[in-house]
Length: 369
Image (cartoon, rainbow, N blue to C red; front, side):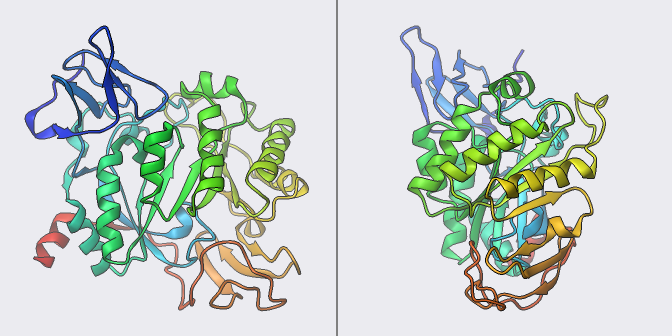
């Protein structure tokens, strides 16, 4: 039985219509949840009260942290800068391998202790010296109204906005949501429909549609991440097919991050991904023509570095999330040969480093008052 929706959780939500049989269909994502009065959608945070849809997590967060931008991961969006990260609860996918399951699969709001409105979050980001803010930890698609309002407030203050998402969203909300984002990291979880259905409870094509939309119809800078899980989505054939599609449909300048799986949630019996798998996948992607391919969750310095695709010079040398050498000019051109590196860059004044700093948002808000 659904947890009752309290009065304080009833923030008006968009993207729904009433069906002929009286049920309400949520039009936010391809799950198309059909709800009776009092029911919640599969994401758990959107529900029906009477003849209205409500978002139950508006203004409520599972916590705030300052991260290096490279942790999102984004290696070509103002490298070395800091980003204020936060999420809420719930998710519209059902990934058996979820690495943030305690937040994304939460069916209780006891984790949502941090309360902050859009303007308050923007003010805190400014006071902390963050270049941007990330909607992350759980998928921001499901708290789109909150994320978009925060984005508006951030843009007024000169703060960039980043969505870390699986890209599982319908066309109308997709257009409105990404119009508010400056950058995104999209989780392309695999390249087979069978994987998406069995392991995530979703479908592949809507994600591919989102990627093509971002490339063809927006100015959003985006990068891709694929978590490689042993024997499920790590075959050379699948990786080659995925990279060939990326090169053809999105272009060879889209950065791709291969990340290592570790046993979690409903996949504790599956072994961790060895570094050799990520290194092999990276080579497959490079052979397919992709120019910027990275490895994550393993210590492999070559897979952390941004290399100039023209002269091969190591333009940005990294050790995990920390930048050791930065050999680009203010416009992001290689200092060795002048080649433009794809992405968003500015004058580099020293990297934020690999720190992850928790933020007591309430204390920060009160200090700002």
